Length: 129
Length: 102
Length: 110
Image (cartoon, rainbow over all chains, first blue to last red; front, side):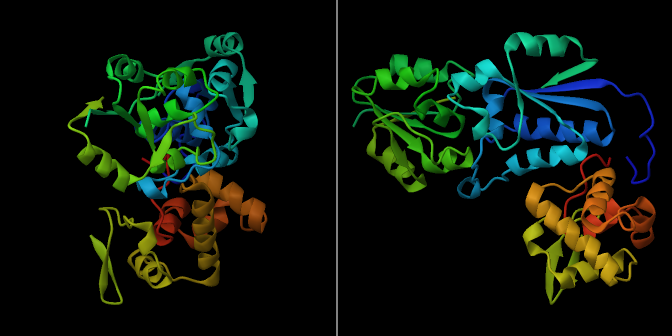
């Protein structure tokens, strides 16, 4: 995309990005975040879901200095500025890991698997990483 | 010295830790690294896996991987020892063989 | 490619973005600006410093729309609009200002 405003007035689709992997062990989480930012830059209607080990991406207090990798958890706090406001966490995944919303770097909406499934069925595009 | 087992996959995502714990002989050491460090946390749906074999196996977890994932303050299962990269090397040297479960 | 600053070479990718953000300095920024044919004024520095603070906080280079909005929130509407930012950085505020600030290319720019 150029810096000028081309491509910003087009079709808006409902995109859902489903994050299922822990950060750092694999590159899926970072690449998934990149996809979210790109979809948001194109002003799409973006929802982001964190389930299974994906909820660990949002864990507060990440410190990657000793493993010499980039800590990308602060970037989730930038999503608001990208107008990505629909962040969902699956209740079952959170509970299985002994976590609560207070353990996460951004405010999220906690939904049951059933509710998330309903939301997923309403999307135009669903991508999982 | 018996064997050192290293595991690097999340116990929520794969059966790697389960397989390791099924085969590891009494007296062996298990070192949890990368995404396997989640297996060392107390109070999760999979905590019982490690806790169940605590009496027979020595459990270690890699500190830098714990810190990276924001778990520096998290409660670990009783009996798990946090190690650094230097200790990792020592563990490999101290054991007869290392099995890296991938 | 790279930039020469105080007798050392700072590595950059083929588009001129430096590859190690920790090597950034004001002298380097001035050097990059020269390559971009931009005469750095206080207004330019204000945007460059803003971008560096943004990166420090969020660990990404913002897309142009996000930058414009963030500048508007921080410095007011007379600066937080694309006309003002394009006057300072004619080849694209996000791209040129990020390059001068030592940031990676903004996500969402192909």
